[in-house]
Figure (cartoon, rainbow, N blue to C red):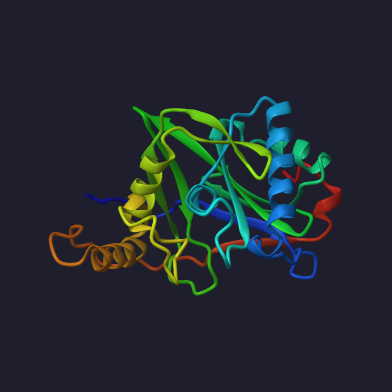
Length: 260
């Protein structure tokens, strides 16, 4: 698999979130799986009523397909929907249904990811865009270690639509051919349980990295290490100084929807 590296010195990655004293605390899904599944079902019905196509994805899809439940230790529900549907109006609709927004992530002033909370469960909603039968989504690297700044990763997987399925009496949406998608994203060993998974960096599904040279150098190093021996990405040019990640924390967001 090839990894495309795109040099872009100003990618405009921005996160806005509630202050630390206002952010919710979350329950583990597997410890309260029936309640978590009911919350997911309510979200799906809300999106259906709003006319927004969506499906479960990532670790949530993996757990529901492989284990008929949630992966032990997983603390967020993953949902994908069309990027063009991820709008302030949709955020407001979710808030009115009790799904409280606590985080928004932007790339070049485009909303690409929203974190919402209901019943003390974290739901991660990401926007997809499709090209020639492949769905893509952008994942800014915003974790506190600062390993990745001034850039974002793009993941891709085959997409041929969605289909209904039922888990624990709850009707949900999943991508068509889910086993094929799980193999593309997690690799051929997706049925095997692992003790650790870096949800920010998943080489099997990684197709592109965009950002400043230093960001790309670090991504290329990790990607090459994950691939083992063989040809890796091309060498990167000298690093440029990286501006600090812009994170805005505001108070009272719960009472101001939409936020922007």
